[in-house]
Amino acid sequence: MATLTSYGAYVPQYRAPLGEIQKFYGRPGRPRSRALATPSIDEDTLTMAFEASRDALKGERGVGAVITATQAPPFGLRKMSATLSRALRLDDGAVHIDLGANANGLLDAFRIAATLDVGPTLVVATDHLVAYRDRVADVLSAGAATAFLVDPGKSGFATLGPQARAADEVFDVWLLGREQEPRFRLEVLFDSYGKVTARAAKALAAITKRETGRYTSICPSQPHPQVLRSLGKLGARPEQIEGTSFVGDIGNVGAASVGLALCLGLDASRKGSSLLALAYGGGEAVAQEITVTAKPKGIGTRGMIDGGEPIALGTYYRWTEGRQQQPH
Amino acid sequence: MTVSAIEFTRLGAPKLHLFAMKCDKCKELSPWWERSHCYKCGHDTLTEFELAGKGEITNYTVVYYPPREFLGQEPYVVGHILMDEGVTLPAPVMGVAPDAVEVGTRVAATLRRMKLGHEGDIYYSYKFVVDDDPAPKKAAPARRAAAKKPAAKKPAAKKPAPRRPAARKK
Image 1 (tube, rainbow over the protein chains, first blue to last red):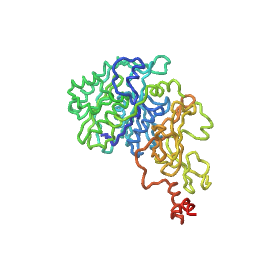
Image 2 (cartoon, rainbow over the protein chains, first blue to last red):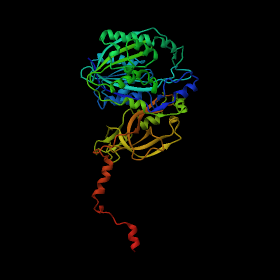
Image 3 (cartoon, chains in turn cyan, red):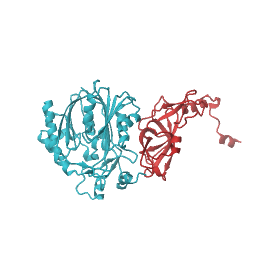
Image 4 (cartoon, chains in turn red, blue):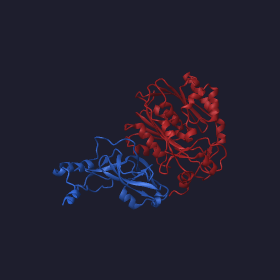
């Protein structure tokens, strides 16, 4: 059975004012997050992945495989996992796998890592999607990265338990003609948020014989109101999610979401704790049981989330939309 | 991809990891771009030597009007970093305000985007961020240690008499 032997996270230093961003783009409604964790102009998914991986590896270089999960890879052709591996100076013979992932990419990567017969696997989830006027719809998009070292042979501090999945057909993202950027329509996504997540959680309960309300913590990719309602119906208590929620503080960090929630859960865990990782993305939900067998050395994830330096709307614009329009 | 021939001749391929060049003969470390010969002994075989990535700022400047490829990043700090191994490298120092940077600040290397090329191609390289860890006690920079040694050997290590009082006596 695969275990987690170490983990790391990186949350960018800067916080963009979401209320002002919504006003600027003419988005109605109350901001659903205090600020957005925004990578600096010289950061992207690769550099954030590097930071998180370095924390997770702690000088270890004997890694058999590197799996990266992101929706925003910096390259069109080059493998992000291979570039990351070179930057970390890992073994040349390592297997490199790139997952074009949404929020459940990390749990997919856990599943793959558990089946690989190559020794320790570095699993990295990193993301930064930017809210543009004409482009990506979710104005909550922020950046972060998380990394986990999964070892199928060695006994780590937490065991990766069984997974359960559920899916619905949704039409959320598509490419039109020769357009470079995908278009999003999130309203059709939200319909399945709650029901698919609940189906996955129920399916997992049937496998593990553990009810949703009996986990120490639930680590959801995003505590969307629909998800919370559905979990509530399954017996989940608010205190199970309290310590692992962060979207209201720094925004939605895409593929890194469930990883960041897991880091929060692991930081607060002790021997015997059980975590329920719940990810939803693109109509599919994945639920996984993680059992803590020894208290892990915390990495201070909450401190990374609570810290940060505010930036002005103009700086956010220059670092995101301005940069995309004019590469120089 | 448009690539500047000068850049690639002088700087080599993009730098994904931090290293210096070590002379096979005298073991002196030189910055990574010194590939032809050792500046100390003139030996022509240098090999890559991986650096731990920690050091301190020995001097710096603030760039307010950057070259075209770096526009948008200004103002930014570029410093000379004396690595713990003893070699000095110039590099940008990020995450610190220009008026907050100080000589002697401990810094740690990290991977960042250096610039975007002519067609949006990304150049990654090492930059430095402020490091909260204290300086290592044992691993004093080789160059500083070397500089301290002759000072200790000087027979006139006894404090020389101050000039002014002597002049006043006259």
